[in-house]
Image: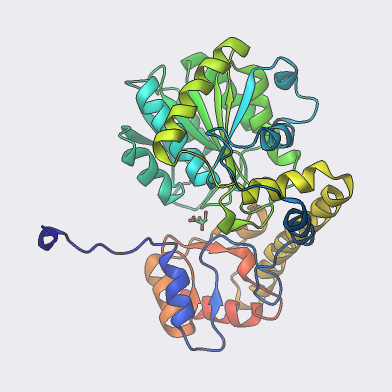
Length: 396
Ligand code: LMR
């Protein structure tokens, strides 16, 4: 039977991890997969996470199931983090969170829920978007379409985005990146979010907001602007939140699908369906990552230190963005790459072509996604001269 199975290439992003590890060049630079790196190129365990794990090791009394919605304590800390501690949506009790295996697991829950409970709804993603969005949504059986987001000159094309959103059939789902757009790094301004809100209302669309990088753009609250606006002004919103990046617990698979409904009654109805979807996919989410997040956010002291370290991480990336453009000046390339200083989050669409990315890998052992997406966190002040020299060479 298996003789008919064809081999397929591995995932374009995760495959970079293996290729990088195999490279023996001591100068190699990993600008591939979206994980935070410090100046030494490591992805450290955050201080508060280490402390929370020590507490858990001492105090944890059971490893029994936590239920399809996950630990209720997790929902209690994640909802205010995402929606705001004084959110009217929480006050109105029309939001719920279901713990999920990472942001990816939350996206799959959302996709299966849409497929089974909102039959006929198609899904719209930005062009470009995180490539796995396509796999997740189409894998769940949804018809997928794209709206423009970045133009040929590598700029945010908001006018075309809005124009297309205005044509989307009523009842369809539109996927928005809350902040730190993956892969481009181009985010919407507050004014642009308000314009999107108007179109979503007018067309009666369901926003599905992917919130994987809270805290990596401008700040934990600032990055939530679009999410909170939509949640407060609309009757129906889905939000997929991830703790992988902002708590640095990638492998613990910690995320949530947040449902905002018109009222508590409708929220409970939707929530009951989501429990079924979770049960049929994986039954219960993994607990450890959620327990870490709870320990941190329930402790004033740990939460404070976590926020401090997250701020340091964000500041490092934003500093590197400016340093990178500055370092390109002597090569006459600062204007060409000026967008890197304006983009936010881990990623930048550099504007480099697939061929240039291939040359960077083959000639300089610099790894990034072939779309030209670079993980800025993989840069460091030490490595910048090497990186800009290589970029200058492939741009000649
Ligand atoms: C990325 O885009 O690099 C990250 O979100 C990691 C992943 O799962 O692709």
